[in-house]
Length: 601
Ligand code: ASP
Image 1 (spheres, rainbow, N blue to C red):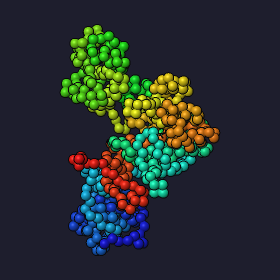
Image 2 (cartoon, helix red, strand yellow):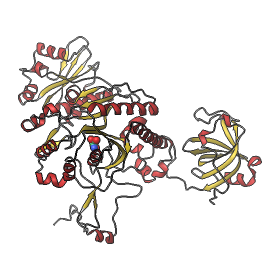
Image 3 (cartoon, protein in one colour):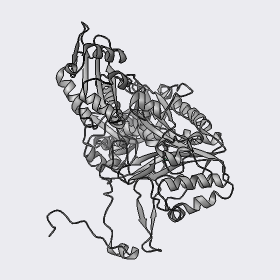
Image 4 (cartoon, rainbow, N blue to C red):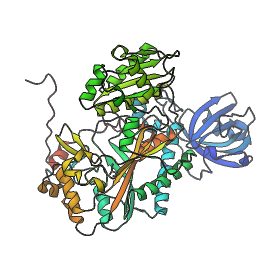
């Protein structure tokens, strides 16, 4: 029978009890981790979000009634116990913060009983994730998830405190907004009052925060829920939280400066890690050239080298062909890996093909200085030696080369570099290497759309010196855009915004907007820019990703209380779900389901 809280007050949490409390009477509440009846004496581990403490029930201390209740205790019963803190009579448990003490119970209330849970509530669960997500409220009782969610709360509090101290105002922006065509796919919400019209859930508060700058709020931040209807990956969710900010009367350095100090503070307090300041900066161009990635993992070297000039004119058709097509030949040096078995090399070649490589050339420098090389018969010894020298190859090293269009070469070698680091165990979870990547291209050409699209978003400021190129060579224009990268993960990004109406109009024109469509989509912003808009810039972090890296979780789901799974559904609530016809009728919506295979005529 469930008992009430009448007359009871919790003294503290379980793991807050220490040896200093020995002799005191306390009341603790929580869940039974496990209970062992040794005949006449019952040992129960009581758990709450702080941890565990051992309870001891003996009839002499707690009376017959409480003892009878204690005999019934099973895992996950919610209980309240009043008792006296003692030094442990038996051996101390070094694995427990409260391992040297126990509580001799005087009274027990069973606040509610529990069914046998579908999986054990324990650290590092081996239960499959689908089942855990279906019973997420039980999954969340597990200590590792409890720690993650508590860390997340601390990070959020610290961010609020830091930014408030820096003069930022926390301002909420609406989540029912206008759908805009740039960026990812919107989640839409039908309007009942305006049948046939839709709100969109924000992909980010971008335009609204820019309007707040027009309004003079100067420094804004928000822990903003954002929604993107994209296919899910390990570190993506359809809804996620951004630490979103915007500042007026600033340029790139001002944004980077305040954010470096924010990162330093939270990583010190949460991870006891001192972020060395200033954080290293690489331009996008340099990041691509040296690491084949716009979010390079800086925990290890293995940098790419452009050997196009060295192999120019060689007889190896793969290299020569790539150069003829305007591509490049680049390599990486897996130092000390010359002995890598053929099977492993073949697997890496296959891996590279997954990123668009037609193949991967390799050259092992054997201990005696001779070469074992997949393309040796196409090149002279001198050519090979020049190549090895260019790669700073030493006996024992293994060199890989990719030859293709730049984009493919970067993708292949950038990913190969990471794969090698994983295989060689170079990626330490407790090492944090931050990096700013700056000067991103303003635009990238979309083959699918047959036009240029904004690499960051259409409100990003081109670099002043590149502005003249915007009509003649749009792909070469660099932007005042920056990403903050940690261990190869993009934590966040932002840019200086265009604050000149004419530049903004030009940008929209390059993106293929007619004047009418630009007005229809962004008219409110363009109009706002006619009333004294301050130069402004901002940045947004993915809070989920930051916490994930801080706690060393493998998945973003481990730091979100109620995450969605791969097909964007919530296994707990079973969302999305069908709704009643009446609801659809009110919205003027008729459902047309796609035909299933086989049902087609
Ligand atoms: N709104 C941008 C984003 O979500 C961030 C920014 O530019 O501030 O990526």
